[in-house]
Amino acid sequence: MRRAGALNAEQGRKKDKGRVAVQRHVVARAEEIPPGGRKIVRIVGRGEIGIFNLEGTFHALKNVCAHQGARVCLGRVVGTALPSDVYEFKFGLEGRVLRCPWHEWEYDIATGEALFDPQVKIVRYPVEVVDGSIVVIIGQ
Image (cartoon, rainbow, N blue to C red; front, side, top):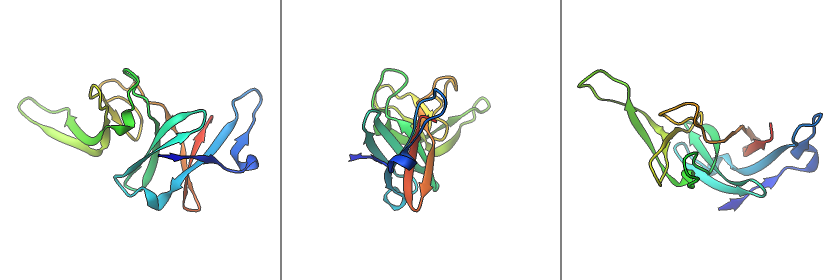
């Protein structure tokens, strides 16, 4: 597991009237996480964050399941059964669903939403790719 570092002070933190400081953390090089891959990093003061590459788009999720606090980003990345007619079976979202290793709660990696209830979510962080580096933005 890699410890993520903040960008220089000018780039790393911004204060707005009474709001939390925005922090930008370089967590990996884009080529380190191929499509379908993931990397779990620890950000000081924030805990672990899973970085996922879905077809070239990076997503960052806090490594805590909304159910009972499991390290959800260690779970399998799978697809799931989709709503369908009686006696019909449709499978979809292949490579986009994160299944918690403890109780198999399923989350959409792109949104952080639980498949059974979009109101239940894993904390998501915005991600940017800057000069080939993956940057997670916290406090936005």
